[in-house]
Image 1 (tube, helix red, strand yellow):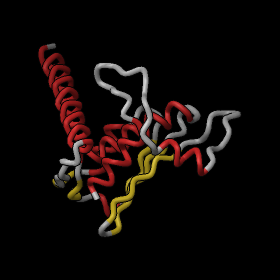
Image 2: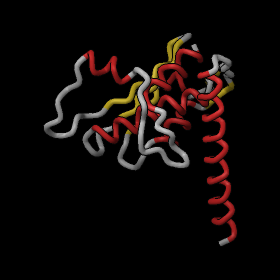
Image 3: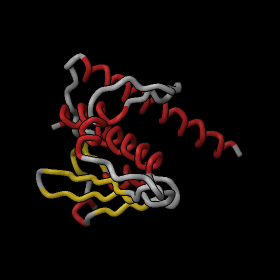
Length: 157
């Protein structure tokens, strides 16, 4: 139906706009020009929009009302973390937990390791947060990685 086609087109346009905003945000961060913009955001809705079927979102009751956050940074951090969790974790084991205790929003992504996968050492975790050359880029993913997430979160405060 026409309504379904319009909804699909709107969703694609929203994805392109979000990707463009993210790309500009990353470029500004690299140049040291990014300034965080906090707007009222329904954190639970944003997080639920990012998970796949079979993944869980647990939201603290304090997050029922909109919270002033940098939505671009929130989306970047959670999306990149989810990509890594899905790539390296056991299927269906992803849980996104969010809580708020003024002045901090805390978002945690958990997952079980794949069968036989070793636990990461503290050194391996530190290495993952460092900049590295990424391969396999696509039109909407430029291998952002966790080092960019770290920069984004630091810029947002």
